[in-house]
Amino acid sequence: MEENTNINWLEVFKANYNGETEEAKSIEEYIKNTYNGAKYVPWATMERLTYMQDPTATFETMTNENGGLVWTDGFTNKNKMVAKDGSTTETEALVVSHFVKVSCTFLGKHFVEEYPIQDQDYSAAKIYNQNLVNKAIKRAMAKVASRATGIGLKLYENKDLQFEDDIEETKPEVKKSTRTKKTETQEQPKVELVKAEQPRVEMTEEQKVANILDGGETEAYLNGERTFEPQEVKEEITIPREIFELINLIKTEDKEKMTRVLQNLNVAILKQHGFTLSVEDSEEDLAKKLSAFKDVTIFTKAIKNMLN
Image (cartoon, rainbow, N blue to C red; front, side):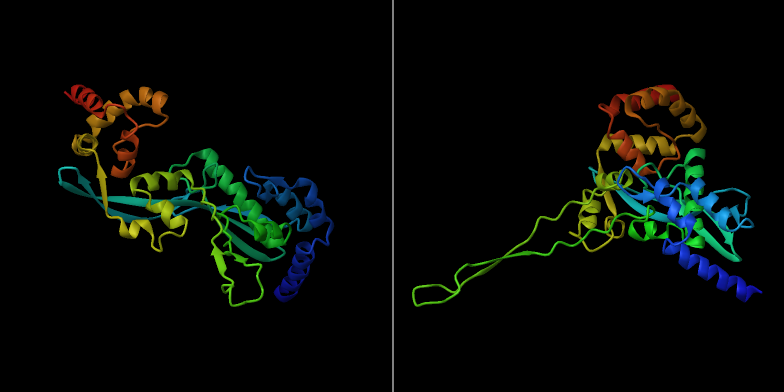
């Protein structure tokens, strides 16, 4: 029975993939484009087409061991910060990634899709909310349905929304001399290799922050100017003394006191700079945020006064 079910699934999958079924043909009118030109089929359309071909099909949002919808993976990243006077402090930051899992059973075949929780520009989200989680679940549902049925699967083969575009290598342009015959008074024709200008990789917001912190090595790595991961080589970050001292204050002061102070200040900070400060921020994040302040010294004095 299972063997016949699998054969039936394969036949349906091939027909859907090749656009031969009515359901596969109908997706053309529902295809949409993202802001960067990637094509996709809405999750509701994929769910409907799945049930039309298999009324017994099921979708399930899988939960983690604690019953939550979000799965998290992480590792500890060690960094050394150096102030202008040469003093150093070593920190450990937990680097995490968040994703959801959605399964689909179609004509007896079971599929599981792990999909990252992403920001609006499809970069990995460090901080998520219900809206981002819901979007990840629906995108995972659309993709797992496509994998299970074959409907619209070619759209992912052309451009998968989970991943950045591959940068096509531009071959050097060869300019040849128009002279074809060498004489005693002519020089040997020269072939000049002219390297075509390579387009710069457009960085995500997360990569832009990393690029600021590592002095441009992230951009160099993404554009092929370095052959190593920036975080494996860049161990030291130089920051202004006043910012260094404020970071130490935030991290070493009583956590509850500092949290209350920052909460009182965050309304004004959010309005002016578009972000908030937290004792849970990593030293790298604090350095990036505090660099936006015009006068960190005055801000430090204000925090100290509120702590007393």
